[in-house]
Length: 415
Image (tube, rainbow, N blue to C red):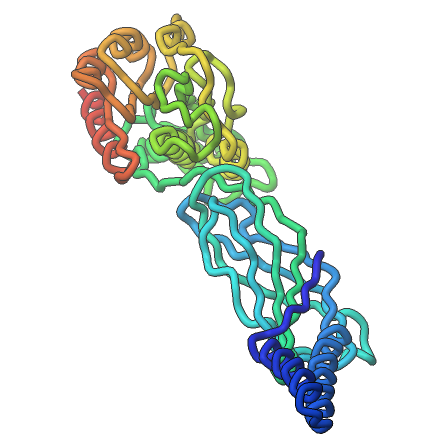
């Protein structure tokens, strides 16, 4: 923390006037000018002393709600300043420095304080809203508090060096649900709906035990067995989905290797990745997130576990591109297995890449590929291989290509 006590414009004028009085008094021998100059100096010293004896701030603490800021969404910053003051103080102003990764209005009026002679330290709460602009970890601060004496002659600026790191997660887009797929392709939420729609006769019945809900009694089976029976849905394995984010350096601009938030195309891909994961988890899928070389980017997230989705967002705040290019080797990861949806997100995507990933479409119930920079007829060739395709515009709405791809996928599944 550092403090400065510069004079205001008014105070600087008073100091200059006092010096002029001393010069003129010495030049013309006018004693009254000396007294007037001394009076001005006394007033200036009293103004500075009043600032020194008044407000004293020792502790600054910040908190955010939510604690992880998302690109494009707001969080509330609360700044708590511990204040001690011996005499009443007039109001001042404050300003909290924001990094380039955040935007918002972080200034205001610092409240006046009453005498603290009879009490201990008091806490002043300042709050403002910030929105994420650039993914990464950024620091808020320092906080500057400025106040003046009652006559406006002196100004006191206190700068607190404490900075608070803030995690800015990638933008999370609310994508349309996968509601048009059959139970084999849809998530656990869809599977449950389909089971209930089949009618009670197709459910398994078991003997009633204390604690079972009376609403689950299977009356036909109870009459047949001459004892109370309850419905028990057949257990099915949790459907799985895979989201693949190709981080190969050849697919992105050089800036994607250097720092998060530097390449707009890579940022759009990361946003598409986390948005797809959130949609699939919400729909009941168990989702794994991997790179095209098989590297796990996020541990398996069970269907409906949105808490783990929030944890994934925090981890993706610092994700960057990597060296090497392994998209052509991706089919080996799915060879010999059948899986649920496979969402592939790439940057530069050419016809040769479309040919390379073609075999994956035969191992997925819903293969979808989204490219930020498709070249030539790459997407058309991928569609001919069985992929549902979409082009991602860094400045556009991700929900549009997602809806188009899933609608084509629904038509394909229903055939």
